[in-house]
Image (cartoon, rainbow, N blue to C red; front, side, top):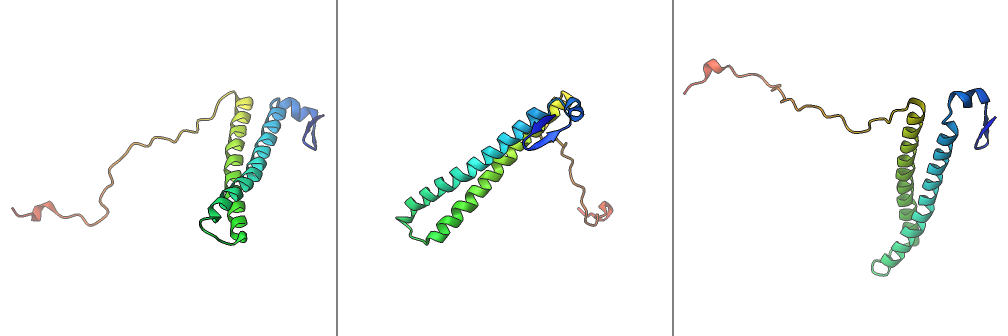
Length: 125
Protein backbone atom coordinates (compact mmCIF):
# COMPACT_ATOMS: atom_id res chain seq x y z
CA UNK A 1 0.00 0.00 0.00
CA UNK A 2 1.08 3.52 -0.81
CA UNK A 3 0.09 6.27 1.59
CA UNK A 4 -1.08 9.63 0.32
CA UNK A 5 -1.75 11.72 3.37
CA UNK A 6 -4.22 9.73 5.44
CA UNK A 7 -5.51 7.75 2.45
CA UNK A 8 -4.03 4.41 1.44
CA UNK A 9 -3.83 3.67 -2.27
CA UNK A 10 -3.95 0.12 -3.56
CA UNK A 11 -0.69 -1.25 -4.96
CA UNK A 12 -2.30 -1.88 -8.36
CA UNK A 13 -3.28 1.76 -8.70
CA UNK A 14 0.14 2.90 -7.46
CA UNK A 15 1.84 0.61 -10.00
CA UNK A 16 -0.34 1.97 -12.80
CA UNK A 17 0.51 5.57 -11.83
CA UNK A 18 4.16 5.68 -10.72
CA UNK A 19 4.12 9.46 -10.28
CA UNK A 20 1.24 9.43 -7.80
CA UNK A 21 3.42 9.84 -4.73
CA UNK A 22 5.33 12.73 -6.31
CA UNK A 23 2.09 14.43 -7.36
CA UNK A 24 0.62 14.05 -3.88
CA UNK A 25 3.75 15.55 -2.32
CA UNK A 26 3.58 18.45 -4.78
CA UNK A 27 -0.09 19.11 -3.94
CA UNK A 28 0.66 19.00 -0.23
CA UNK A 29 3.48 21.50 -0.72
CA UNK A 30 1.17 23.76 -2.77
CA UNK A 31 -1.47 23.79 -0.02
CA UNK A 32 1.14 24.51 2.65
CA UNK A 33 2.47 27.42 0.57
CA UNK A 34 -1.07 28.77 0.33
CA UNK A 35 -1.59 28.44 4.08
CA UNK A 36 1.74 30.13 4.77
CA UNK A 37 0.84 32.95 2.39
CA UNK A 38 -2.45 33.43 4.22
CA UNK A 39 -0.83 33.63 7.66
CA UNK A 40 2.09 35.84 6.60
CA UNK A 41 -0.26 37.97 4.49
CA UNK A 42 -2.52 38.72 7.45
CA UNK A 43 0.45 39.63 9.63
CA UNK A 44 2.08 41.78 6.95
CA UNK A 45 -1.07 43.62 5.91
CA UNK A 46 -2.08 44.18 9.53
CA UNK A 47 1.34 45.70 10.33
CA UNK A 48 1.28 47.83 7.18
CA UNK A 49 -2.15 49.17 8.06
CA UNK A 50 -1.05 49.98 11.60
CA UNK A 51 1.59 52.26 10.08
CA UNK A 52 -0.99 53.79 7.74
CA UNK A 53 -3.41 54.34 10.65
CA UNK A 54 -1.05 56.91 12.15
CA UNK A 55 -1.78 59.23 9.21
CA UNK A 56 -5.33 58.09 8.40
CA UNK A 57 -7.16 56.73 11.45
CA UNK A 58 -9.90 54.19 10.85
CA UNK A 59 -11.50 51.46 13.03
CA UNK A 60 -9.73 48.20 13.86
CA UNK A 61 -12.50 46.13 12.27
CA UNK A 62 -11.62 47.56 8.83
CA UNK A 63 -7.96 46.83 9.47
CA UNK A 64 -8.82 43.18 10.17
CA UNK A 65 -11.23 42.93 7.24
CA UNK A 66 -8.74 44.32 4.73
CA UNK A 67 -5.98 42.09 6.12
CA UNK A 68 -8.09 38.94 5.90
CA UNK A 69 -9.51 39.68 2.45
CA UNK A 70 -6.15 40.69 1.00
CA UNK A 71 -4.35 37.66 2.37
CA UNK A 72 -7.18 35.39 1.19
CA UNK A 73 -6.77 36.64 -2.37
CA UNK A 74 -3.01 36.27 -2.17
CA UNK A 75 -3.32 32.78 -0.72
CA UNK A 76 -5.75 31.77 -3.46
CA UNK A 77 -3.42 33.06 -6.17
CA UNK A 78 -0.38 31.26 -4.74
CA UNK A 79 -2.28 28.00 -4.23
CA UNK A 80 -3.74 28.15 -7.74
CA UNK A 81 -0.32 28.85 -9.29
CA UNK A 82 1.35 26.01 -7.38
CA UNK A 83 -1.51 23.58 -8.06
CA UNK A 84 -1.23 24.34 -11.78
CA UNK A 85 2.46 23.45 -11.61
CA UNK A 86 1.53 20.17 -9.88
CA UNK A 87 -1.00 19.41 -12.62
CA UNK A 88 1.68 20.01 -15.23
CA UNK A 89 4.01 17.72 -13.29
CA UNK A 90 1.32 15.01 -13.20
CA UNK A 91 0.81 15.26 -16.98
CA UNK A 92 4.57 15.10 -17.50
CA UNK A 93 4.86 12.00 -15.30
CA UNK A 94 1.90 10.27 -16.96
CA UNK A 95 2.42 11.19 -20.62
CA UNK A 96 6.04 12.30 -20.80
CA UNK A 97 4.98 15.59 -22.38
CA UNK A 98 4.85 19.07 -20.91
CA UNK A 99 1.49 20.75 -21.59
CA UNK A 100 1.60 23.92 -23.70
CA UNK A 101 0.05 26.73 -21.65
CA UNK A 102 0.91 29.54 -24.06
CA UNK A 103 -2.09 31.39 -25.49
CA UNK A 104 -3.01 30.28 -28.98
CA UNK A 105 -2.18 32.80 -31.67
CA UNK A 106 -5.26 33.50 -33.78
CA UNK A 107 -4.63 35.27 -37.07
CA UNK A 108 -6.38 38.63 -37.24
CA UNK A 109 -9.18 38.71 -39.79
CA UNK A 110 -10.87 41.98 -40.64
CA UNK A 111 -14.45 42.18 -39.51
CA UNK A 112 -17.10 42.35 -42.15
CA UNK A 113 -19.57 45.15 -41.87
CA UNK A 114 -22.79 43.93 -40.28
CA UNK A 115 -24.84 46.98 -41.29
CA UNK A 116 -26.71 47.45 -44.54
CA UNK A 117 -24.45 47.60 -47.58
CA UNK A 118 -24.61 50.72 -49.72
CA UNK A 119 -24.91 50.07 -53.37
CA UNK A 120 -21.88 51.44 -55.25
CA UNK A 121 -24.00 52.19 -58.31
CA UNK A 122 -25.77 55.11 -56.65
CA UNK A 123 -22.58 56.94 -55.80
CA UNK A 124 -22.33 60.34 -57.56
CA UNK A 125 -19.10 62.20 -58.16
